[in-house]
Structure formats: C-alpha cells, structure tokens
Length: 294
Ligand SMILES: Cc1cc2nc3c(=O)[nH]c(=O)nc-3n(C[C@H](O)[C@H](O)[C@H](O)COP(=O)(O)O)c2cc1C
Image (cartoon, rainbow, N blue to C red; front, side, top):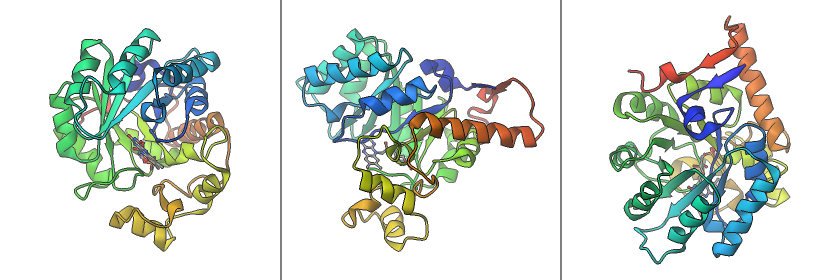
C-alpha cells in the first residue's frame, strides 16, 4: 500500500514515521537506517561539537541512503548569530538537507535563518500555546509531544489524545503526533486523529542501529506501564532517578531489539492488516483529508 499524508508529501518520505531527537549521541547510522527504510531520519545537531563533525555526520548518512532526512536543532535560549547552529544551517543547506526541526525554547532567530534559506521548517512543541506560536512564526508543520513522551517536560503539557483532538480545531498547519507511540496501533490511532505523521524517539532508541548503551536498550524493552518509577517520571516530571526511566510511555511496547527497518516494517504491516480487517483494500491510503479535520 502507498501511504500518503501531507508530511510524506512535504518532506518526501514513503512512510509518515519520523525519528525524535536525542542529544549526546551520534545518531547518523540510525538516521540513515530510518530514511533508507522509508521513514524520515533526523540528526540531532546538538550532538556535534563543530562544523566538521556535523558535516561528517551528514556525509555518513548520505553514504548509506539517498533518501531525504532532516536535522533537529534543540535551542536552550534565543540564540544569536554567533551560535554554531547558524553555521550548521548553512552546512545543512550546502549538503542538500531540506528539512529542519526546531525544539525547546525560543527559536525566533533560528527560524528566521531557516526561512531565509528557504528550507522546510517543522517546529516541535510540548504545549498547544507553543504550537500556535510556532505556526504564527511561519512553521510549515508542528510536532506536538504529549505528556506520554520522553525528553523535556512542561507542567502544562497535555496527553496525546487531548493534543490531537484540539490540534484539529486550533492548528491550521499539518501536525505530527509525538509521545508514547511505538507500535502499529499508536501509529494508526495518531493518523486517524488527523496527525499527518508520527514522531518516535523511545522506540527507535531500542533498535540495533541506535547509539545508546545496550543495557539502556534492554531497559526500554523491559520497562512498561506497570513500573512505579516509570509512572513517577512520566506523570510527575521527576527526572532525577533512576536514569533508565528517561524514556517514555512508549517503552515496553516493543519486545526485542531489532533493526530500525524491521520496526518500521512491523508497524506498517500491522497497520495495513488492521485496515484490511476494516475492509479497506485500496492501494493508496490517503490521510490528507483527515488533516485539521474539525
Ligand atoms: C533520552 C531522550 C533524549 C531526548 N533529547 C531530545 C533532544 O535533545 N531534543 C529534542 O527535541 N527532543 C528530545 N527528546 C524528545 C524526543 O525527541 C521526542 O519528542 C519524545 O521522546 C517523543 O516521545 P517518545 O519517546 O514516546 O517517542 C528526547 C527524548 C528522550 C527519550
């Protein structure tokens, strides 16, 4: 089946499945594996110390795949022109990267630079307020991360479901679901709720190509929604201990550490099976009509 959404059309990938950013690790191999499998791999710019290391990572991805991939810029403040991210945007442009994802704090300056370079700009927000403001600043699409997700938390964060049903009413640009999505049912639910792609981090952290330590991957497989420490972290914003809970409610939904391409294949095959069971037999699955449906 062919999966068509506004995001597959904008970023030009086969399946509407995007890698979530994670800092401190070189994720070039994982990015390449995801894009090669038809998803949309994303390099996390903050993981690279200087222009050369960043450019090398882009080259590494391009050696493995000819398919498009993006770059995530997680800003900790409204950064100025001297910041390495400004140079990285130029490097990305020179290397033919077309899509930039911004996240975290104030991104006005960075977004102007992205737009000036005529690149596709996707902004990731943890609250609807920030999603709307990203849209007003000119983002081409919005990633909305629910309370279930990993990474930075916001006390005003809502759940995946509340985000999706409200995004349909309040956002005009295509939106991407994020937070706790790791398998076919989460994937399909997000698309049925109007999301034009899913954005997954925890699930991809546990794949063969992921650069995190093996014992962390194992914890992602073993941890699940019955673990009290895990619930504490996800719902009470306690990020200190234990470290292994630094994942999301997406943990425990995958049973083994497998290559990223198999994870994507499993999600797609199972989602297609569900649609077939519902009587949907068409060759093309067009989700664009569900975008911003209210
Ligand atoms: C260990 C870890 C590190 C993360 N670091 C970043 C980061 O540097 N920048 C960013 O934009 N998001 C970061 N995130 C958030 C993810 O990109 C994504 O938005 C979120 O985890 C989605 O939820 P999921 O893990 O359930 O798929 C991180 C998430 C995890 C689990």
